Image 1 (cartoon, helix red, strand yellow):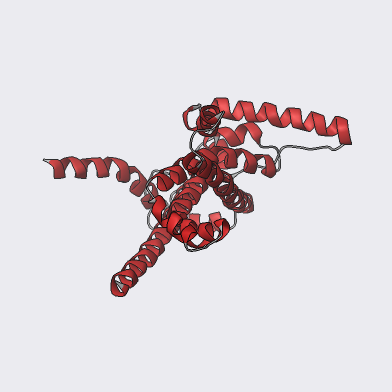
Image 2: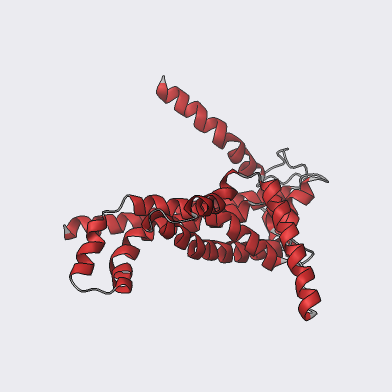
Length: 269
């Protein structure tokens, strides 16, 4: 009975995706009507400069936002896990985790107001004309991913044995050396997981980006969403197939690397 429920659940999740990928190879102009096998929509996607430019922009923003989120969120998680109770800790933790519970509409609107105020202040003080675009989207997505990274890193640090760091310090290692040689390798999986999570959140976001972006900051999800308003095209099916293939390739590479590391550790043991 459990296996039947598992199969039905997986079918419910994956069947629409597989249908979308299948119709990407249809020659018909109607997105969900089979007209024979063809790769015409993949060729059309490769010739769609606007969509390719939006995809490249989304990848750059996601990579930058994930890296910034790991740096800031890692430090926030370190403070919450290693510095005990200090004045303002509850407020600091609430502010760091606020994007986890706030609706994205509220987050996007608040960030939009912040950027408008900063833009007015920079123009009044220095005469700078700061517009909204890819940079504001990157900062907004980094703010969103920071909360997730902080939670992952804090949980990882809370599960580590402090005796490992204390032993290194007792042997004469400086604090930075202890962090570099002991703590950082132990929390590296959490940092990688946080980076991937922040990258995925940024690559998938529509709501926050719609608030803080400008004419030069149209990401791929925003472009796809705007096209869906006027009607679905088979190129969207082809795009979904390409994204699914890339995601599967990355997961396969990660599994191979983790498998090799696991076998190497077992042989070393």
